[in-house]
Amino acid sequence: MQKFSLNTAALALACLAGLGGVGIASAQAADKFPDRPIMFTVPFPPGGPTDAMARILATELTRELGQSVVVENRAGAGGNIGAEYVARAKPDGYTIMFGTSGPLAINKSLYKSISYDPRTSYAPIIYVGYLPNILVVKASLPADNVQGLIALDKAQPGKLNFASSGNGASSHLAGVMFNNLAGTKLQHIPYKGTGPALNDLLAGQVDMSFTDILTAMPYIKAGKVKPLGVATARRSSALPDIPTVAEQGMAGYDVGVFFGVVAPKGTPPERVQVLNQAFSKALDSDSVKKAFAAQGLEASPDRSPAYLGRFIGTEVDKWQAVVQQSGVTLD
Image (cartoon, rainbow, N blue to C red; front, side, top):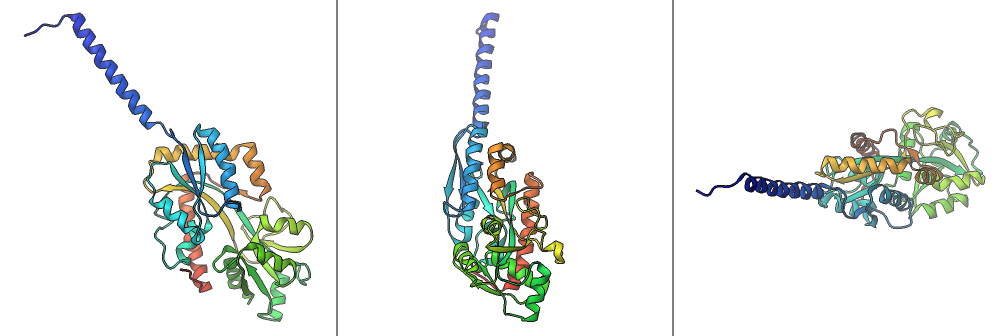
């Protein structure tokens, strides 16, 4: 049997240790996340408010993560195309989505055929915030608050109408919820987008709209429309003097567009945590806070992944009831 000297044995052990070190280093390198660009899917076209917010976040996230965060628009079917794409993506943390109330809550009940479930198809990352809707009426309407509007409607049931950006949009369902809670008979007039609806409101062709606060704010400040109530549970920090609809006798009225980030189901929890922390730091940066405040975005009450998961579940249930009451379904 061949004999090894102590020096030979020591050398062999050193070599094995070195190889082991290489293996550990390789494993650590493999576990480093992220080590390549992250695709940040926006399920809407470029140029809209969701896209704009995603690009603001992506710039700051690139600094935080040390890797490019690339915004990728996959629009169509009210956000379903992008949402389905992300739900089917590899669950490795490199494909994530900036979702809104539509694909993450409303569409589950609104569309007849949908291949994902916002409650079970994703790993929640962070609730970014929400954009309140606001009830605005044409300047000539003889109502200055919610109770005045309700009285006006009940004096002539079915005469007043409200414009929305389309069947099933939050601006439509907000009106449905209002009718249900107030016992009013406001007539729905759907448009193909927020712009045309707003134009007819400004022209006095329709009576009111439950639009988002970002769209309405310049016209409120210019006195071209009258704000009767913020549609969310809390007042807007952008318009703090405007009371909520709930404050004016309609408890439980809460309509806004929320924004959340999700990854495909099965994404490793440690990677979700890395992303959550990076998003939280980005949201705390001066540039993002300033940009989002200018758009009327309200900060999230809780940034944990668990909170977003619970919130999505309650929103799916809430909007299911409203969609059923509206009678609207889409293909």
